[in-house]
Length: 437
Image 1 (cartoon, rainbow, N blue to C red):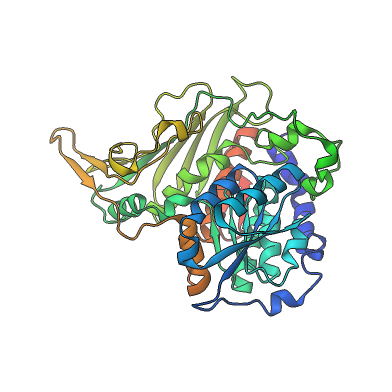
Image 2: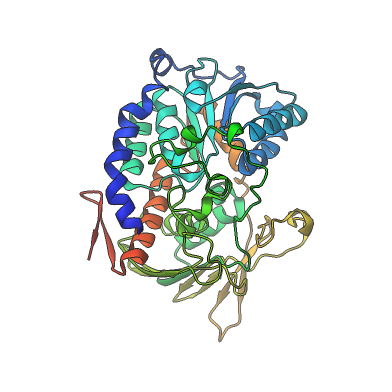
């Protein structure tokens, strides 16, 4: 089934699930939204974690470093898999000293009036549904990327955050990185001249997200809760553990990987969404997956430039992150200096991943001059989750707002639809709709 067929069938199903029945459980105690607590300067912030998988555990480990200084605690945890629930609860206690309350489903956690904010670290199909429910329940939220798989949900998320006044951070971490802050300021200064092309790549030689699932037992999984608004199907441990490979649970590589890159374009160029996109994709190397393992996309932006995006999971060469081509020079954000405290030990890297330290990158000026300009990190950079926690008190908009999430979600949705249909997709910002063109 193509992405477009799936979106046509589920747009209304998703919208109704989000705006009506999908929130019923979360709003059973309707007063939580009306009387949401705003933490004071000395109040301890109580955070609930929804989804206890690898990503949640990585974020919890990051946050443990500044937990005492920022005066917050992990107070609650929800996961649909008993193994993850127990493992992550134990990890939180070991790392942070917090004994979390555990909940079987996210709606139960959101009904707890003691919880101030939640971290949504679930498979992608649940992101926006839970984000909206959290805001309606009076909770601030962090939501992993891609924020949305569906345009109607993405629109609803933006509207709900605005209406409820909740503080929401989306998981595109480069927005809080001092190096990228400096890069954005440099591009926006105009020193590159007229930028006509931006080249984005994220290539890998591995199967990507193929995980063992022999240890998953049906009696330890809330399969109905996992499916949420999707049609009921028999329990499948591979679909549960390797959800990234399936169209029901993930938008595909332009969202899973490319969200960081397209968001960087939107930020650096101050151009929040694409005008149109064409794309070609295929499952060419790893056959046991529904999603493309190889895709080429060409975006056109209202600001008057073209953006190419490529992911291939059959070869890691040319793993450039982003190259901005201007009339005065070229900014290559792969040109990191891999020395000093920013280097991440190779043994800590997931196979195929690359970690980006906080050392300087360079802008190469005109080739005839051979000049290289070093761009040093901005002192305003900080850990992305720390930025979120600080905004929970200040009530300022975090670095990666819900509007940023809308932009990278839209780019991914358009790209995969274009690849599925073999037609150009155009975004109409007045109607806030995607159409063929």
